[in-house]
Image (tube, rainbow, N blue to C red; front, side):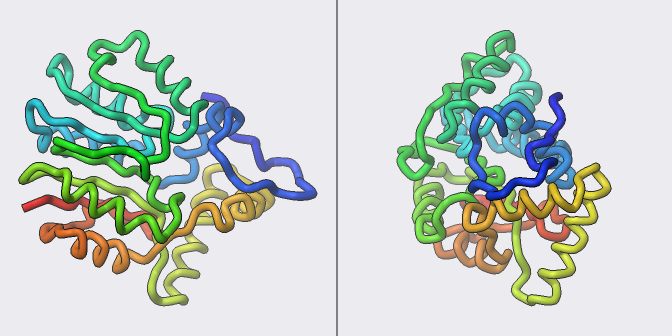
Length: 242
C-alpha cells in the first residue's frame, strides 16, 4: 500500500481534488487513514448486501472507486453467482479495479462502467451501494438519484450509503470537525496536509446533515431507515424498500 504524501509539501495553489492517477496510487492508504472504521463499514455493508441480495437481480455500486466494496462482497458471496454493475467516473480508478479483479474467482460477476452515476439506468435491483459518493455530486441532483434508486429497487431491496455529514448545530459541527482532524493527526497527517487537503476539497465535497439525508430518503419513498454506524461526522445508512 503506497503511502499518501500528496499534500505533504507546501503548494502555492492547491488544485481542486480529483480522482486522478496520483490519488488512485495512494487511495487505500488515504481512505484508511481518513475514514474512521472504513474496513468495518465495508465488512458490514458486504454482509448486509449478501443478506438482501435477491437471485436474478442486480447490485449497483455507484461510485465504486478501486473496488474495495466489490472485493469484500466477492469474499462474502464465495462461489454464489451474482450480477453487479460497478460505476465510477474515474478511468484511473476503474483500471485499478480491473487489475484487482483479474485473478479473483467470480470476478466476472462484476461489470465495470465508466460514467457519471447520474447517467446510469438503474433497474431490477435488490441492493444499491453509495459509499462516500453522493457528497461529491451537485446537491441539486441528489434527490433525483435517490428517487430513481427507490423506484428501481425490488420489494425488500436496500440502499446502503455512507457519507461525511455535518450537524445542524454549528457548535456540534465544529466539535465533530475538531475530532476528525485529531483522528487524522493520530494517523500521521500533519497540520499542513490536513489544511491543504481541506482546501482541495472545498466546493468539491459538500456534506449535508443527517436530517437532510433522512428527509431525502423519506421523500423518495423509503419508510424503513436506520443509521447502522456513526462516528462523529461519518454516518452509514440502511434504507429498506417495504
